Every structure is written in structure tokens, then in C-alpha cells.
Length: 185
Length: 185
DNA sequence: AATATAATGAGACTCAAAGTTTCGAAATTG
DNA sequence: CAATTTCGAAACTTTGAGTCTCATTATATT
Image (cartoon, helix red, strand yellow):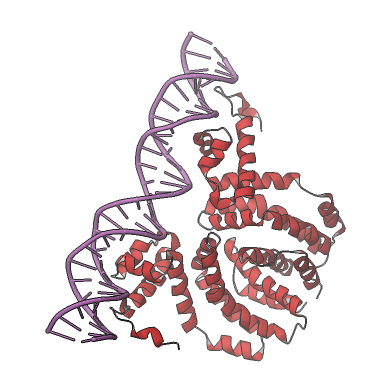
């Protein structure tokens, strides 16, 4: 019921192009910055046509979001997973915050684009926000009984990180320590 | 030393146009949404030339930021001031959060634009972020002794509000209550 | 093998809106 | 009156996202 449509006639989608596009998108954004990257530059460097890009993604931002989410998925650190299992908030933040900071500039621009595009916003939540938010909920579950209160704390913790990121203020280990302490006040 | 340059020759700046532009910018953004407003539409409706707009503001976003900051200044509620003086965090949040929510869509778009423009970002901090952040610092000063810890709490509180705003999640009285409770955990 | 279908890379094209430039008229100072 | 600066109006430039066209290629069906 999932693979049923694999049997369509016609030339199949090129995985080579797909992967090349995601790869190029990721590296161009990391090296040249979001602003310098264009749909053209991605397609060109990936040896693909712009048409191919727009056939599979609704926008330039969606490609970059996809590229970032892809890289993020393969980087589910052991320390992060350990922190989640043991419910260690500080360890979680110490693993999460540097990971976010590393792709910070790209994240900021994606969040920015998402403000102008509801569908991108939904995609952002689904691919980048929720995958990080859910583990935090689990960690806090044992600590904060009330669900509403817990949700506010989640917003406070990730909110602080994003707030700092968007305003060009430090997103570092010190923040991790202070946020962990804050949940324990 | 402040008014010394008032004695320049030539036609002086038209306060009528300045005010009309700020007024139009505010109302167009509130009524039609940030995306529908263009530099042309503002100038046209204000009975001004686009030239005039760009002579005094560096970008469309700067005009709207200015317009929002202006309206915000005139709306320093009594309840808000009372909350600050009495150091009542809940009262502060109950006055601040609805005020933010009221102009939420515009704020989101300004924050988004600011990600692409460092100067606008600095202006945003100066005109909208700091004027709200400083009072919160004062309120927390009596409650949280350590300056770093206090700063993290500031980021957590305003961060939570922005996070909710940017992700289309509720920014309401319940959040005010929960954030106030959070600082008291 | 022949045919229908759908994707491919390349590149021309459209479009919208930000920001710039030009212009003649109007408001100042001296 | 002369110099200076802003004014409103409107033409113009620029940029990049997204669309369209096309000849070509890979696959399924018959």
C-alpha cells in the first residue's frame, strides 16, 4: 500500500540528481551563506536543471530545509540519545545547543522565510522543530507533571535558544548550563 | 548641540509627509498584512513620493518598524508601568503579551526581514526588543540575584513568546500565567 | 521491437517588487 | 534674487524566484 505507485510508466526520478541537489544545497548554504545561494546556483552545481529542482520541491527554501533535516537525521549523536534515555536535561542541552549553533545561520534564514510561507512553516515544524521538541518533552515528563506547564517550559527552553539565535546573541555552552539550572529553580 | 543643524538652507523636511507615511505604514500592515504592503502602496496612500520615503528610511521594513515603535511608545499602559514598579511579573506579562499578540503578524515579518539585514536587526533590537527587555530585567532584579541567570531567564521568557509567535502557536493569557509560574518554580 | 509515458538538463522567459534616478516645482536661508 | 534642499511623480534598473519549452533519455506496457 506504500510502494504500489512504484510501477508507473515513464522515466523514474533520478536519485543521483536528488542527492546531488540536497548535497549542494547543504554545502552552499554552509559555505556561502543563505543569501548567496540561489535556485540556479544549486541546480547548476548539482548538474541538474532548475526544472528538476522545482518538480520535487515547492521552493528554494524547501530544498534547503530538506537538506538540513537530512544531515540532522544522520547526526543523532550517541550522547544525545543517552541524555534522552537518562532524562538528563543538561546533557541534552549540551548536545543540542552546539548542534543548533553549528547550522545557526541557515536555521535563522529558514525561520525567516517560513514567516512568509505557511506551507514552509508547517514543513519547518514537522522536519526541524518537532524532532527536537519531542525528546525534550520526554525528558521533562518525569520532572514536570502538569502538561501545560511542561509545554510552557519547552517553549521557554527552545524559545530562549531561537531568541538568541535570531538576535545574534550567544548560543553556547553557558546558555545550556543556565537553561538547565532554570528548569530546576 | 542637538538642534544646531536646524539652520540649514533649503526646503525643510515635511512633518506632514513623515507622519502620513508612518500612519499609513501602520494601518496598511495591520489591515492588509505585511505581505500586501509595498513601498509604493505606502507612498501612494500617504500622498508622498517613493523618493521621500527612501530619503528618510533605509528600507521598507525600517519604515514599518518605525511605525510600530511609534505606536508602541504611545501605548505605555498604566497597568504596565504599575507592574514594573511593583515588580509583579505576572502583571507585567499579562499586560505585555496581549500587546505583543495584537501586532504579532507584523512583528513576525519584521523579525524575518531582520534576518536578512544586519542593520535592520540592530534597529529592531534598539526600537522593539530592548524597550521591552529592560523592564523585565528590572522586575527580575529583585528575584534573581545572578546576572547571567537573570539574563537566561529573560531570554527564556521573551524567547517563549517569540517562539510561539513565529510558529503560529498560542500567545495568550495562559502563556502569561505559565511563564510567571515558571519563574517561580 | 514499438509505443506511450514521464523525467532529465539546458536555457529562455515572465513577473513583482525593492530600490534608484530624473525631473520640475516648492519651501527655505541669506 | 540666488543657493540649497525637499517635495511628489514617474520612469527606470535590478534581481532572483518560479514557469515554460524542448529535445533527449529511461522506464513500463503491449
